[in-house]
Length: 86
Image (tube, rainbow, N blue to C red):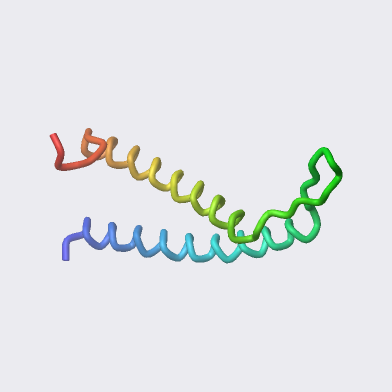
């Protein structure tokens, strides 16, 4: 295998482990947030947000940032946002 392929496989592996770890950590933090910090509206009724929505939005933001970093990395290495497309 070429060194570049090994490097890319290593980066993908590290990213997958990091995402799995952060997902578990954010799920724990969000469940703690929901129990200690309910939102209130102007009528002083307690409004709770489902844990799944908080986790989904957090992961969505993390994946968006990962995509931006990938786009910058592709641009720096190849000069194109999507390598292969002219």
